[in-house]
Structure formats: structure tokens, C-alpha cells
View (cartoon, rainbow, N blue to C red):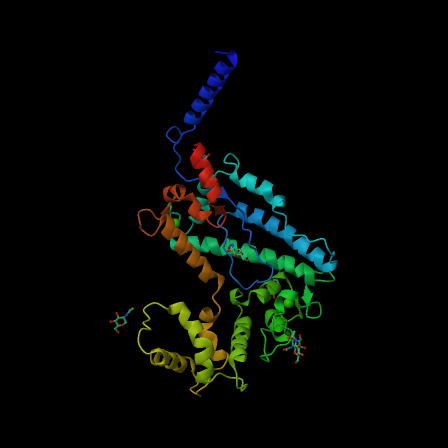
Length: 366
Ligand SMILES: *[C@@H]1O[C@H](CO)[C@@H](O)[C@H](O)[C@H]1NC(C)=O
Ligand SMILES: *[C@@H]1O[C@H](CO)[C@@H](O)[C@H](O)[C@H]1NC(C)=O
Ligand SMILES: *[C@@H]1O[C@H](CO)[C@@H](O)[C@H](O)[C@H]1NC(C)=O
Ligand SMILES: *[C@@H]1O[C@H](CO)[C@@H](O)[C@H](O)[C@H]1NC(C)=O
Ligand SMILES: *[C@@H]1O[C@H](CO)[C@@H](O)[C@H](O)[C@H]1NC(C)=O
Ligand SMILES: *[C@@H]1O[C@H](CO)[C@@H](O)[C@H](O)[C@H]1NC(C)=O
Ligand SMILES: [Ca+2]
Ligand SMILES: [Ca+2]
Ligand SMILES: [Ca+2]
């Protein structure tokens, strides 16, 4: 037997030992392999859609930086379109960020949760997180996001860089232009003067950052003027006979289903379609028609503004309910620190990916 074969045998034996030492029995893992991933789907074209609210400010910061780069690229291209030189956002640009997130020494989700928990557990500080506390946290994170984006959007419009946007400066960006043709006679009118004026809380003719942010997010503005504007827009959009108010038919075909979608519990549509919808629709119409003239005005819609335009709070609560339900191991409706630590990826769900390939690879070699 030659020396070569001996060496081969020894090598094989060592390899085998290595494989065994990496087997699952020697290193039990609580979680299947996860790889944290930054959101890849941020859309510059639709600001009205609620996006996922990031749980962890660090991740939010990273995602924002990434967004900035995409945004700068997009702006650059608007300014000077370079033919033939297609530029998609380079995933590689952000590899360092993802490597950071997946480096357990640098970004240890357990430690992050331990750090964040007391910041969420504030009302009251009792060692458990309630739905309200989690909702508040989500609202705060969401507000940071929207304000940040508004600030960036403002830079586009604020041509003279005085930190204020006048109506003349406000040039509609392409994402607001659904169609220039406006076949309905009324489009959303983002850039209409009325909308601008309703956002100008102090009436000085220009929008500062707060006012501009409210302009972009009227449903979250808390401003009576903007709520009124939103309701007037609802009327205008559904007002097919153009008399400036909604009759029952216009309400029924345009608004009723929208309202109903938010209170769909206990509905039973198994019998007669229109019969079953007619009665509750008539009831709601009568309730809303407070001056009993048989029509709904914008003002009469104000009481259901929250259903027509759910605020950030609505989505923040939905997301809070969802994560609590996912991580609430003892089902008492609250989250303890231990429950969160046991289910860390519930909170990082928007950014982790369970890659099939990763799965196979790691099962094989563990
Ligand atoms: C991202 O967007 C694409 C289409 O735009 C969609 O097919 C995909 O499901 C989205 N991914 C996530 C994670 O939302
Ligand atoms: C995260 O840090 C804790 C100590 O704070 C440690 O026990 C745990 O193993 C770390 N997790 C990972 C995945 O490294
Ligand atoms: C807009 O409407 C005009 C007629 O009113 C039509 O000729 C034109 O093609 C339309 N443009 C678009 C983009 O739909
Ligand atoms: C908006 O306000 C300005 C004054 O600041 C006024 O001149 C203009 O007519 C108003 N426009 C609308 C549509 O209300
Ligand atoms: C913008 O103006 C409003 C009054 O309309 C004021 O309450 C708010 O603090 C101002 N915001 C900023 C960022 O200056
Ligand atoms: C619909 O309502 C009827 C009684 O009104 C009830 O018997 C039936 O179970 C309901 N169906 C559903 C799907 O809830
Ligand atoms: Ca608490
Ligand atoms: Ca102002
Ligand atoms: Ca009325």
C-alpha cells in the first residue's frame, strides 16, 4: 500500500470527523436558518399605500439610507436621462448593510429586543407590552418615516431653498399624475389649490415642513380643514350627476362598500345580495344625513372620515395586533420580554427571508 492511499484515508477520516462535529446534535439551533433582509419593495410611486412599519429604529435607519440612495439615483435620472445606461438600484450597494444585520456579534436580535423593550413598555411601565403600547410604538416609528420622506420630497419642490413651499413652487411630481386626461372630470387633485390652502394652517400662503407633511398625509394631519377637504373630495369623486352632493345611489355605489369593509364582522351575505345590503346602507345614509335633506354633503361625511381614510393609527394597531398574536405564547394578550426573545423574528418579519436554498444548504452541512 502506497503512502498516497494512507494520506487519502487520513484525509477522508478528518473530513468525516469535521462533518460529524457540525451535525445538528452537537449544535442545536432554536431557529431555522434566517437571513435578515432589507425591504426591497419601497415604492416611490405610491405614497398613499401604507407600508410596513419597521419595528427597530436601527433597521429603519438603514432602510432609509438605502431609500435615499435609490431616491438620489431616481432624481438624477429625472434631471438628465442617460440613454442606454440603465441603472437599477444595485443590490450590492447594500450588501454591507445586510452583512451587518446578519452578523450576530454586531446585530444580535436578542440584545436589540432587550434594549428596545423598556422603550416600548412605558404606559404603564409594568414589564409587559399591551396592544396600546405596541400601537403607540408603531405610530411613532411610522411618523418618523413619513416625516423623513416628506422632508426629502420637500427638497424637490422648495426651489429657492427657504424651507417653505409656495403654491407656485409646488410642481406636481409625476407620481401624482394618474392621467393627465382626467376623464372623470375630477381626479384626486393632489396639487389643487384647495388642497394646498387647506394644508396651510397659519394661512401665510406657504407650507413649512409640518404643513407640507400634512399636505402629503391629510388623514394623519388631525387638521379639521384637511379632513373637510378629504370629505369634499369624496363627494366630488362620487358625485356622478354633479350636483355637489351625494344622493343615495351615489353613496351606495361609491362609498358604502368602502365604509363597510372596515366593519365586516358579523356580516352574512349568503342571502339575497341587494336586499341584504340595501337595508344597512339606507340606515347609514339616514344616520349621516343630519340635515335630512336626502343628500350627503362633505360635512356630513366627517363623522366617518376614519373609515374613509384610515389614519396611521389604524395600521399601527393592526400591525401591533398581528405581532402580539404571533408572539404571545401564553395567550394573555400581552408580550413579556421573554416572549419576545423567544420569537424575535416576529418583529423582524418584514426583513427576514427564509430562503429555500439557504435552508437546504444548512440542513445538509449542519
Ligand atoms: C415586491 O413587489 C413585487 C412586484 O412589484 C411583488 O411581486 C413581490 O411580491 C413584492 N415582494 C414583497 C416582499 O412584498
Ligand atoms: C446574543 O447575545 C446573547 C447575550 O446577550 C447571547 O446569549 C446569544 O447567544 C447571542 N445570540 C446570538 C444568535 O449570537
Ligand atoms: C386625452 O384625451 C384626448 C381627447 O380628449 C385624446 O385625444 C388623447 O389621446 C387622450 N390622451 C391620453 C393620454 O389618454
Ligand atoms: C388659496 O388661498 C389664496 C390666498 O392665500 C387665495 O388667493 C386662493 O384663491 C385660494 N384658492 C382656493 C382654491 O381656495
Ligand atoms: C409650521 O407652521 C405651523 C403653523 O402653521 C407650526 O405650528 C409648526 O410648528 C411649524 N412647523 C415647523 C417645522 O416650523
Ligand atoms: C347567515 O345567517 C343565518 C341566519 O340569519 C345563519 O343561519 C347562517 O348560519 C349564517 N351564515 C353564515 C355563513 O354566517
Ligand atoms: Ca406596559
Ligand atoms: Ca403656512
Ligand atoms: Ca344631508
